[in-house]
Amino acid sequence: MKLHWLWILIFLNVTACASKQTVMVGDEPVTINYSKGHGKTFIHLHHNEQTALRAAEAVVQREGGSIISLEHRGGRNIVFYLQGTRHEFDPNRIFSDEGIRKTLSMFGPYSLKAHQEVQKLAQKIKAILPEGKIVAVHNNAGYSLKNYLSGNSLEQEAQAVHLVPSKYFRNFYLVTQIQDYLRLKSQGFNGVLQKKAATDDGSLSVYLAKNEYINVEAGFDQLAEQIKMLQHA
Image (cartoon, rainbow, N blue to C red):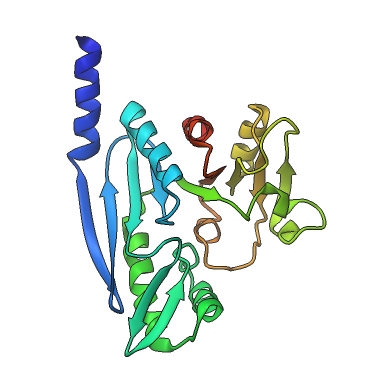
């Protein structure tokens, strides 16, 4: 009976402070869902990475916490039209002006007006980020810890890399603080310590480089492992 009431209290803690706000980016409505509770704050930026969102929800249901997530009509990226022109951007590349410029230019035309539309969303997300540790949740297919190994594309962005031979290389942490890197390494997890002067790509990890930020990456089929990783984050 006590366990039954404990689950009810956890459920109420997760749902009682739920809120949402919709930001119009051009013609595209982007909803920021925020369920606020006691515990870790998880942020889910890529709408198509549903395994990561389910993992965060499972941890919050068991242990409490908060989830910030984006909802829109697209997949990984957000697509919008402005005066008949199509624009596209990665929502994890919008936390600096340089990042917005780069991501819009990568997927189509760039304009100051399009920049301002994307910036509206970035400002809304920044405004609700709480103090303290932020745990991002992501799934990956083409990207992995191997990108940070010597001779690979992101080698220059890592201060340190730890790859456990017995662990799946798609399941890893990217962190900004050395104490988190060392703690997770000692617990037997794969990890990357982001370089202090990482390239400004507009990502949340660069925006929060001076804060305690932990990105939990996992394969799309790694729900159980990602839940475990979020519990240790």
